Length: 323
Image 1 (cartoon, rainbow, N blue to C red):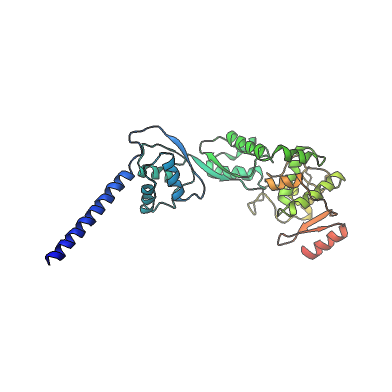
Image 2: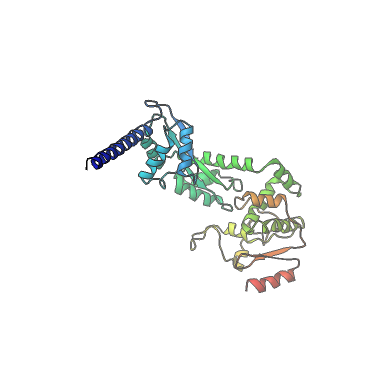
């Protein structure tokens, strides 16, 4: 009995030492990396970044004392799904708990995704919803066609003018001099190329279709044919209160009689401005159009493109796929 008691006592002592040592390690690991430090730096959490990656980078930037301590505290608090993407002002004088609190509540910026083919009014609505930017302010400044679709990390206190500049700067960065040169090699100005790209963005559904549609539209433009694109007419018709959409889905003959410079059924040539903000794929389609014998195209009810060389073939496609 004495031996059993001694063994239990030894095991208890070992367990106590392990627990005590673990507690002391925990207290130390979750303390500030540099107690009393007041300087701060910006730390950016990427979208989808996991806790291990965040912990490692915090340690590498000397903002926490121990990445394992950070990882365990996040897990114990069940906050791994609450960590926000964005940028944060952190200090090595903050404890692990304080840093976690910042990462779940204190983002300085907001992620905003601008979708390819949105017109400026749609972007304005998104900014109003996420950053409380007045729609009218953004729409006054927005340069249709040049608000580059992408995912942005935007400061919460950014003005409409600052956001327009961010989007235009990204456009200028992403649309290279080589792409601009290839567009002008098509016999059009760069500005006209962006107008065409905005139409291709709305008319094309896939990266395969867009260069072919670009080729068709360029041929029509050079031969003084009307472009006859639904997208330009949808732009002219504007907001549809019934469907709460800026793009009317089903056009009727009365729509095609609309008196507007954006009605490419009535007017030859390009509309006066872009009709949306094209993504890079649509812009590249204008820079690298595919030359085919086709002069016509349509999309069936499933969104698949069908091309035709003659009006007779096109009408047959209309009867086959749209009736």
